[in-house]
Each structure stands twice: as C-alpha cells, then as structure tokens.
Image (cartoon, rainbow, N blue to C red; front, side, top):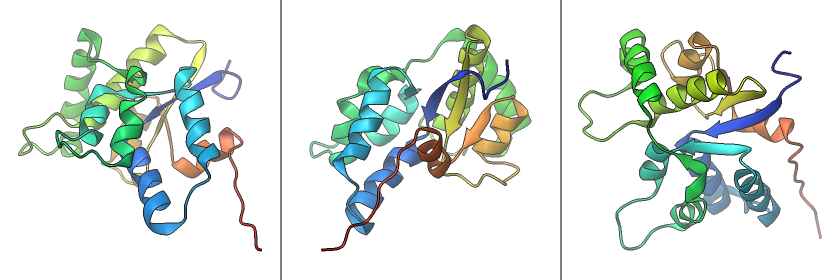
Amino acid sequence: MNHIDKEKIYIFDANVFINLHRINKHSIPLPNEVWEKIGELMDKGKIISHTTVYKEIVSESKNPDNVSKWVMAHKDSFKSHTQAQLKIISEVVEKYPKLIDYGNERDQADPWLVALAVEMSNQDIAHDYAVVTQENQTSTVKLPAVCREFGIRAIDLASFFTENGITFGISFS
C-alpha cells in the first residue's frame, strides 16, 4: 500500500497557520468555511501539529491575536514531546545542522515536526503522514528536504487544499 492508498494525516508547520491568518487579514478575507474545515479536520485528528508550533503561535502576551485565539481553541491537536522524538531529533540536527538557529534559546519546531512525523509513521503504517509547510519545497536545507531524507512527504498549503477538496471562489455583485 503506497501513500496514495492510505488515509492522510497532515502535520501543520506554524507558518501554515500564520500565512492563513495573514492572507485573511491582509490580502482577502478567507471564507469562514475554510477555517471551519481546518478545525473539523483537527477535531477528527486529520490535522495535527506539535506543542512547539503551539508555543510559537500562542504568545505570552495578554492580547493574543486572532490566529493565537484560534490555535488555543484547538490545543488538543498539538502533540507533546516523547522520548522517541528526542532520539529522532538528534539524528535530524546531526544531518541538518542548518535546520535550527543555535543562537535561539527557544525550542524550534522544524526538527520536532520531522520527529513527530517519523514517530507517527513508524507507529501507524495505515496512515500517510505529510508535513504541510510553506517553506521552499526545493531547498536542500529547509524542512521539506529534511522530510524527504526521513521518508516523509512534505507539501505546501495549496497541495493540502487540493488533496482535501478545499476550494473557494470569487463572486461579483
């Protein structure tokens, strides 16, 4: 059974949530149905992420923005660190040291996303796990390259929309 035949589970990078929010705020308002569909997929466990992504988005500020509030309402979809992930992360950063900024004291999500995807794929062969990120898909040092190295699909938001039949159009009055 290849990844096409398997039920898909998507692991969202922080930049996906942030870019959706920016499009909605600065470009064109996204239909509420887009946010509802993503929320529904999260509630069903079809979209997950990692607690490091949650922490990147949800600031410590007393005035969270709309994306922070939306993410907080879906906190159960963000998976915690595990011992298995810790082992995978050491291999990830050894092979791809440029994936993280060693000067940054905060946990950085990219290696955790790879580790989560590898861990879940190893535990659950019935599903196809894909990391959804807006990082350059052709880069040799960014998240998509690391995912490929570890046998994980990496797709962008447009591909996620296509795979899930999420479309929206423009109407003229």
